[in-house]
Amino acid sequence: MYHKILLPVDLNEESSWAKALPTAIKLCQTFDASLHVVTVMPDFKMPMVGAYFPKDFSQKAHEAVKEAQHDFIQKHVPETISTQSVIVDGSPWEAIIKVGKRLDIDLIVMASHTKRKFVDYVLGPNAEHVVHHAKMSVMIVR
Image (cartoon, rainbow, N blue to C red):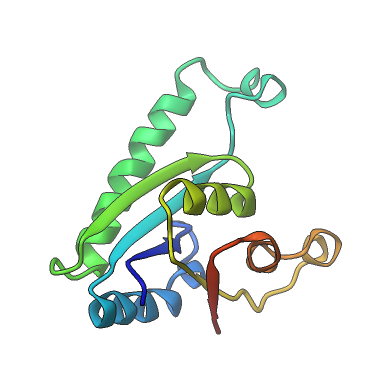
C-alpha cells in the first residue's frame, strides 16, 4: 500500500517525533516501505536574514544538522528499514509538502503538537497546514 513514507523531525524537539516515529517504523516494516526523515531549517540565505549571519553559516548549519540527523537515524531507526536523510530550507509545512512531491512520497506521518501557542491560532500549526495542502496521504499521530 505504501512504498515511501516521510517523517518530519525537529531534532531539537522530541515531541515532533516521539509518537510518530514508532508508527512510521511499523508502517515501513508492514509494507516494506522506505523511510525518508526530513528536517526543515530556516532559510538563512534570504537577504533579510542572511545579513545577520557569517557568510558560511548556512553551510556549517547544514553540515551540523546532517550529522545530527544521521546520528538520530542510527539510534532510532532499525537497520532493516531503507532510510534516507533529507534536509531542506524554508517554511516547515511548505518544505514538507515540496519534499513529499519531489520524492513521490505515498504517506507523511507527523506528530500532533498539543501545546498551542498564540502564533498557532493565528497561522495554524504545521501539521494542520500539511493536512490541508498536501496531495498525498497524511497521518497525524497523537
